[in-house]
Image 1 (cartoon, rainbow over the protein chains, first blue to last red):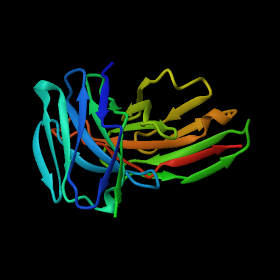
Image 2: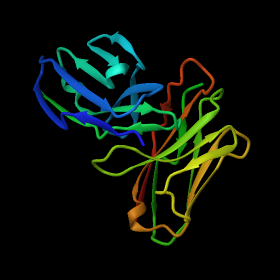
Image 3: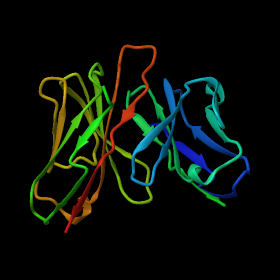
Length: 108
Length: 115
């Protein structure tokens, strides 16, 4: 099956700093999503981005499907950005496969 | 429609008891997924439905686990003879197949604690 790897596994930032999270996947995909998991465990949709670039406020994402990776950019980080970020891909088997996540801590 | 809804939000049960969770997807969505997440791990796929048909089950889903989606709307996940290793967050998601946009949306999850 498709393997999804995220890096870095952990990241500590000072408030106001920028960061880039990476998601690599091992095969062609039909869909790629980025999620933020809140402290209560709910997965919040950030981007649906099978290819190309999208921006939403301080967050943006780029997927290069031909090279099998996606990047999530967080600019001017805030303490509320803390949490776990997951990418998930939808392959030929039509099930979402999650990466291992990046744990982000933004310090004031 | 307020999104995917899961009930209960929390469940504490004694080892050996049966539990059932419910998931109500976004109304027009024809695909429904169940995932399990343990502490420090990403969500792991359990099973999914397309309308009322269960199309795939993970090897993680032992014979103590059963899922149904009787009319292609809400779904239930039952765990029989619960074990402490079943303690986890159980997540449900829905999406629309046969669409240009297959974005999946998750519910708040049901946190199960087996004591």
